[in-house]
Length: 557
Image (cartoon, rainbow, N blue to C red; front, side):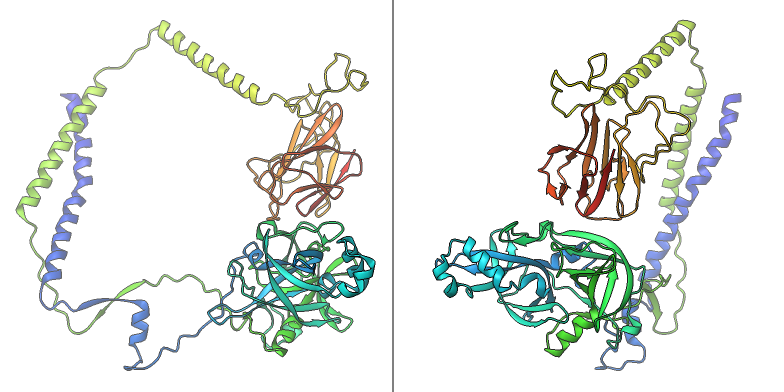
């Protein structure tokens, strides 16, 4: 009896909790009745329709302001507008041979009558006479036929690895180091890029400034007949990131100086902002230690002068970022006086059902609680010991699995028997792992940011990597150190470069030294300019330059 009295508050609380169900059901019934009553004059309309209904008579057009919209979503998406253009020699059989190639980007409009053009660096794509001679001779043309063949050149834009479309030189400028090409047909699988510039073409009120983040887009390597006559498509695009250092005039040409890497592999390509819109064209020049891009105002002057249509964005034509509002997407508008309908009565059958369900649930809960509280489970001493033993066994099993995961893998071939670097016990020197005791002055940071060390004692000494972009000192103090952009799965995370793969490369240490291994990266792993194959490993020497995509590191021992 006492137990039942204790359960009464629980039952009462439950009945109070389900009471809103009955009220809700009654309200739903009232709403249904009121919706069918005569005299209801409320009409649901959208906010847009409401705005059009005020101050506009029949036949009057909407004056809603139209804004210019970018053709891409971000800097990575802008890679879909970057292409490889080649200067080629056509032999008597109609086959094309690459003399030199360059990065370029597509401009134009979209639509049925759209026309696409390509912008690139003149220095990067136009081959001089000596270069043409040397290239054509290397293609098997005799010296006697060279004079007749030297001008048999044309230009192609790479669509895929084995397909290209012709293009022709439309305009060129030595002062701007700029060339504009007209495509023989539009590329449906590429996006014309938008150009972001000032409203009036004046360089004093540009919509970008120093310290803004920028990105240079191009391909992995320079293209030439003698070194790398390769064809790259949009899957090979790489991005180099940095910040604007200055915007000024150099030799009467307005330029942007920045610290994003620019070289023969991406000159002629676009310099884009965070949204992927073009603010300049990269050229093979330097202003001190900084890269140089021709400013957007110079580019639009050329396009406007020759009537080339393109997607132009300015601060006044781009829709400003609006703060979120709490306005409803649907409102109610009354068309006249509304007489409130009389509230409908809740059906008696519904009330009876709710009461019955409430009583049944209350009784069920009371019975369950009574049964559960009626008897306490008392463990004997033997059962307690058995449970403790099972818990200890599970803990030991987990620790064994963890220890197995921490075993050191050795990707290197065995050291020859004459190697004097083996330790006294005949091992490889790799027995020391990350569980070795370190002295009190050492600090190791993993997963995020660089690995910084004030001094290692008893840990693996594999030397250090210096990240040139930031100066970070990455200590190779583990059997394996991974670098990539996935902070959950690498030891050193590069967050600010989208060209880096999730797990890009691994550095492993053994008695022979340090070895770098490409982990099937998208944009490649390079040692002293030589690209490693997928999952290929290579020993590092002191002073070697390691490049992961476009991020450079120096190995120091």
